[in-house]
Image 1 (cartoon, rainbow, N blue to C red):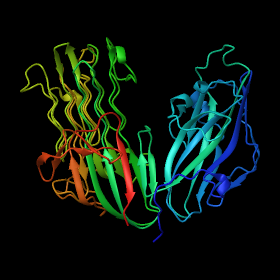
Image 2: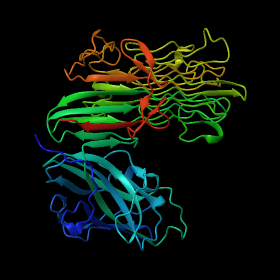
Image 3: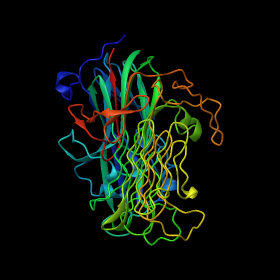
Image 4: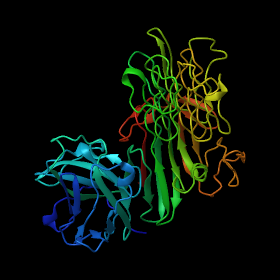
Length: 503
């Protein structure tokens, strides 16, 4: 078994341990004509990591008029390279794009696409430290980890945003950048929210502790609070080079005056529905402002979402549920989002007819109660506060949280969405599904171990109120903070994940 050193960032090339690698990417926009060139040699090596260009040409030409439609940008020839870890230690790495001094085209006009995933505006990517004196800014394209003698391939596409204005602000400008890899020897790899699939490849055979935090549902400072996300953890034995896919839940959004990430599902848009948080959050209602969508779950899968959506969902071996979105009817009347569950998600509250109009939390084998069946939650996603049976109806309600099973969306009259349920393969009280299950016919085993045979030991399941679950809800313990230095009631904001090698 390989040895993994303790975490210590090494960035000094003068020591001969070069863990910051770069390739020059120059993008010249002259009257909306683009050419991307790689002027360094095709291989840049260090004593440990190395970065290789698989495209043998020093100049990569993208012969397109720009700005171009994003659908056309997706078809551009990618800029390809490979990151190799020749070290004896596990490496956590960040793949960054650093804008260099002399660039005259703002990064807000640059679209990026990594490994055929969703394209995003460069300015929307997380910022990070610059590692070159002549860098203007640095943005994170991707993060991951590599074990000893492991490698990973990347492709990068850059183009000018289709919405770039036809003004001197963007014409006859240039953009120059470096692709930078910053690596850190570590036992622990953290996964922050990115809105995309993240991959972990086991660097060595052994036992790993996996921790997940689900995302909070959408809420507002007026008192209508989105349900807090849940927490799960456990130890699992994996073989070297085994692959797991991490999906980190996104916090729920708010409609109305704070309406970010608005859904396309609405028809009568007095205040457009806020789209649910990434990875299963349900959309909010559209009447009144400050309706919150559901928070997304965080989970670990054995099959990528790119293969088949349901096959990917049923391959989940661990799920930390998301909280339900809140609703806002008046300044004194609102519904709270249900907290993310342990085995069962919490119900969303409502200001009218609480005995019938409430939204129910997801369970281990079913969705929760819904006042309006059109707000259907399901296996892996929360219900939306959208009345499909009466499309023109305006709804004052929050979306359900994502989870193993999602929480129901609110049923109008200020109803908050319910929280989703959590799942851990090997945790008593969990109910795994059979491998032959299909989307419209899910069959449960009544047992906790996933059909893959992979399971966790020393499992911990904590709901969004900080209560520990065994086969039922237990006492209050709080959940670990992301940095592991303290405890908190439940998770706020986006989800999170950590995997730690323990031997």
